[in-house]
Amino acid sequence: MTLEQFAPTGVLVIIAVILAFIILMISRVFGPHKPSFRKNAPYESGMKPIGPANRRLPIKFYLVAVLFIIFDVEVIFFLPWAVSMNGMGWYGLVVMGFFTLILIVGFIYEWKKGALEWE
Amino acid sequence: MECVGLCDVVLNLGVRNQELARFLASLIGVLLVSGVPLLTVIILILAERKIAARIQDRIGPNRVGPYGLLQTVADLLKLLGKEDITPTAADRILYNAAPIISFGSVVLLWAVIPFMYWNTPEGAANAVVGVNLEIGALFFVAIASLGTLAIMTAGWASNNKYALLGAFRVVALLVSYEIPLVFALVVPVMFAGSMSLVDIVEAQSHMWFVFMAPLAAILFFISSQAETGRAPFDLIEAESELIAGFNIEYSGMKFGMFFAAEFLHVFTNGILMAVLFFGGYLGFFYKAIPPLGFLWLGLKGSLIYFVFLWLRNTVPRLRIDQVMNFNWFFLVPVSIINIMVTSLILKVMQEMGYAPTVFAESSLIGILPLTIVMLLKDAIIIGFILGRLGQEGRKARIEATHAEESLAAAAAGD
Image (cartoon, rainbow over all chains, first blue to last red; front, top):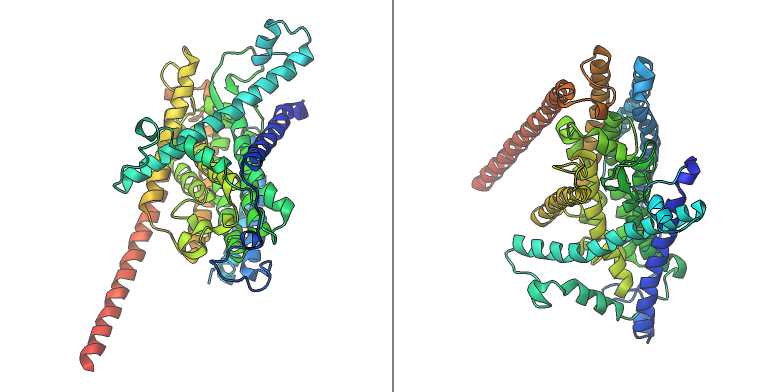
């Protein structure tokens, strides 16, 4: 039953991708096709590119991504709880309160540690 | 699963097989659903350019067709006729897949949006909707982050330093603004007791959620503006720093796809906000004349879209550290506190019998006490925040004056 719900979504995924693909194909058919070395070079304001562009990222971007994952997982716990709040009564609220407490303690620790600071 | 809605219509048209009818119905429905955003995007781009022009004291496009109505069509034809370039340094597969993912994900978002009321037998959705998913809100969150992924892929696969810098910023900005977005989304889900967007709209039939959770609505508004990468959060394509940001290597229709996806995403967020907080298709006579519901939804969505545009065209771009600090030190704590306080008040009032457990089966009188308490709570939180902001601002101004005075004194001493 639940999987059957997703069948139209699957159809929509296929249609959306095919649609986008068709639009790209139209432009490929109608547009000119005269590649040249200069045209296909990376655009860096007219300068000759120095070195590869796939360099290592500064660590702070990774840090933000890792912090995001922690919070996102917690958010995912919030959604089903919000749906079934009526059925769980006080027990659900207290348990979720503890969960949020742990989350807030972690958040304060990150804050004080300076992990959220962006220099 | 019995055959209802569009499936019933197909059965009546002469298709005997129920399985086939269901399949045909879902196919037609999906085509309709994906057709709506494709048509709207043509109007949206023109509307955006016209409104931006008005705000900047210009006229805007007015040459192609009456009042410039055909401008987007002309642009589309021009983009279709452009050369399809894949840079030699780029990762061919990812580079070409990124615009498709970006556009496809925005079209997918429209699957769960309920368009209008429809009276159907027991057990089915009481609305015209692509797919009435039980996890509509979660579906929205998941697909919206697919758009972020597409931008990240585009920046990485272009193999260009500007594009890569744009992709870095996506990781930082879009990803961290997703947290307050989802936290704000939890509040309507909590009120409705369901993640299905149809149920959320039904739960608002006596009182729109914006009156019960204005703070959540504001948080949702701010973070969805950031999610779409619009000013003041348009760091991912900051022209003065990164030329074009993540889409620098894209040209022709591939660029057009990103462009269309961005515009459509903003409008989709406006529609979604209308559904979550402004009652979706609810309005006068939405039950008697269902197409009127579609009009209400479009009207509410367009108004919110207009505010998005207004904001985009009036405020300057923020620095990345300002944007990140605003998110982590302001939006995230406020949204966590908002959820905790809201759930506590809701539970207490439900246990004491002052609030209904199922909003849709209540009445205006039944829901009024909860609304007043929630409104008071939000007013207190917002007042507290504004007070703190005022204090901080005063402190900063006093410090600035002191610094100026000491500078002047030093200059006089010389």
